Image (cartoon, rainbow, N blue to C red):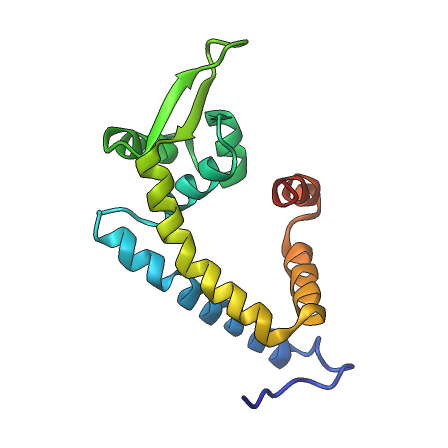
Length: 162
């Protein structure tokens, strides 16, 4: 594949920044394509996918913790959670120490579906990593982390280093 890379001292020019933004948009479109099609079959959307993913990565997460990760309104999360619980993908239990807490966990059905959604993305990322090599992957991670707002970097690092 032929890539037009900017000379090292020109990567901050507007045209190069626009090229990077466009690549990010196109990559995200294709990264989410297969899961979007699977979600649509069940009348789910990307919010459902994110909830399934982060509840799966954080079993027993309180609703408040999920809200912090997703940065969506309680109303939006409530609609998505209600649907996922009604259809048997997520369970909710009261906290032991604080009975006001609602702790979320994937059911077996939820785990299987989350794995199905994840598998297409895992394959895409693994292939991209393999083609790019370890130095490029390290640089990619660094760029992504530097896109994250400074005040959120610590919590993001804690999340991804589990």
